[in-house]
Each structure stands twice: as C-alpha cells, then as structure tokens.
Image (cartoon, rainbow over all chains, first blue to last red; front, side, top):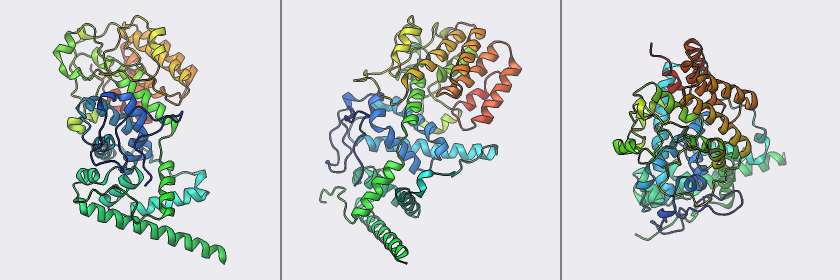
Length: 205
Length: 242
C-alpha cells in the first residue's frame, strides 16, 4: 500500500495533524480534532485532496479551483468534524461533492460557451521515461475499471484510506469491497507482469 | 467479521512500486500548493459568519477578512448594496448545496472601514502595510505554526501587499489610487500568483472610477481569459447595473 496518513512537510517533519488515515490503524482511529485548524489540514492533506479531485475527473486546468473550493468548504465545516472517521475519509466526502458539482457546473458552462480550449496533452518530457510510461500504463488500467472499483482501489492502495470507511462512503458492502480490492490488485499485478514480459520480449528481438 | 485491514493481498512488488510512482506523479506541485493556499487565505471568513445579525453587530469583526484579491469581490458586492459576499467563491456555488456558505446579505453601512487583514501566510504584510487593521476574528484555533508554503513568500507577500493597498483604496472610495496600485502590480509582477485577482479587482476599480465601459471591457477580457475561474461570474456581475 502506498498511501500515507498525512503528508510530510517540506522539512520532513510530520504536520501537526494527528488524524490517522493509514489503513493499518483500527477502523475508527482516534483523531485529535482539537489540534485541527485549516492551516494544518491544508498542510497535511492538500496533496491528498489534489490527487483525489483529479481522480474524480476534474481536469488539470481546474484542479486549483476545485481544491480551493474544497478547502473553503473544509474551513466552514471543520467544526463539525468529530474525528469519528479518518480525516481523509471526511475530506474525500467533501472533495467528492465539490468535484461532482464542479463537473456539473462545467457541463453547464460548456453548453453556454464554446470558447475554452481544452487543456492539451502537450509534450510531457517525462513521458519518455520508464516511470512516466508505467504511470501512464497504470492510469489507463485504472480508467478501464468501473468508477466504484477504481475509487475503491485508489483510495485504499494509493491514498491509504481504510477499506471499511471507503466502503461506507461508496455505499458498498464491506465484503464486496475487500473482494473487489483483491481482484483489482491481482488484475493490476498481472497486467504489469505482462507488460514487463512484453517489454523483455521486444528487447530480445 | 474479522478486522481486516488494507494489507496488500494480491499486490505484486511491481504493482506497489507503480502505484507509488503514480502517486508521486499525480501529486500537488509546490507552486500550485502555494497559489491555492494564497487564494484560500484570501477567501477566508469567520466561520461564524453565518450567524448573521450577531456577527454584523460586532464592531470588531471585519466583513471580508481576506487579503487582496478574492476579497475585492466582497467589497465590490458590498459597494453594490445587497449582494453576495465572499465565502462562496463562485457564482455556481449554490450548486454545492449545503456544503457552501450561505451567501450573506450585507448593507453598505456594514462595509468595513479598513482592508481586511492578511492571515497566516503573510502575517507580516498585515502588520507592515496596514497596521491599523482590526485583528481578524477567524479561526477557532490558531495554527500551531506558520504555514510552510513552499513558495517565494517574499514575492507573494509583496504581491499581496500591493493588492491589499489597492483594496484599501477602493474601500476608502479612492478608485484612482486603487488603479494606481493595480498598475504597479501589473508592472512589477505581470503574471504573478495573484495576477488573476488583480485583473478582477481592476474591473471593480474601473467601475468605481466611473469608467464603466472600460470596466465592462475588462470584465469581458477576464471572462474570456479565465472562463473557469471562480472569479469569472463575479466579474460578470460588476458594473452591470445602470
């Protein structure tokens, strides 16, 4: 699993957010809500929100706007956060709503205006690197999953949210969630192994 | 049921590495992190703003509570009478339903006498540039330490200061001075972090200066340039009344 509970500050120190979001903790790990303020939540979780809204289909050009909006909502609702769910789960719920509304608003705007050039997939210098190719491969793989499976997998295995909380948020049976997660993991592992084998064969020719 | 956790059943080492790689590739760039935080700071309002009358009665509470640009729209709207104020950042905020602040109706007499203070990112700006501002009433708890936004804070602080001065001038009814400060910002920072906010604020300043056609032209240009910006719809509403 890749995810970390909170992000690490530039100096390498953990931010002062004690909400546990790693999947290794108990389902409802204790959260020190008293220490939470907007700055610490942003410091600890801006990257998480950024990645999540991107995975929720927000275009690159709109990511900053949507993340901004998410944190405005967080600011307003922070007092309501009681620590029963992981902070990341709570943030995901907000991000999901904001991203969804953003997409709806965008669809409305696009019906009204046709002036916006869509963000181009212009030259990414990193695409030539193996890492970028693998990242692109995984992205394609994830895009091929149904939304629920994809979100489940991304939140669990990339962002480190706890499966029970993800299942609850997505309205998914817990056993189903575990079964799907395992299936996707195996599917990805196989796909990567096949890709690697194909690359080796190509090089051998 | 057994208390299962996210152990990596079925995930190969290569897959784990690929996911770590993807996570890094998708991460929030440092410059975007700084920009977004600056805008969040700009748009912050007291969380008890929705308390309405009690909040308005409090002479110690500032209406906009933000630094330069985002809050300009609060002031714009205050200046136009009963219109929406800054918490909800975009015109389609209603679409956010309960997750977005209820727009506040503020009367012109509630307009703050001074510019709102800068929050945690660049507190020194608030102290040095507008030392007379009333301290903010905003967070329930102060941050434990200053936000370590990984950006060139001196530049951001300078940008913020200029826009804040422009905003103060607007609030004081001196759109000419506001336009001068905005011109300085354009000259000094061009496409800086707060360029978008500057251009939005300029729409207001032009309108307040009686240059309504210029204001509308600037608004149209803004919307053309930034159709997806949260400020676009607000800009659109500036200077439309006869």
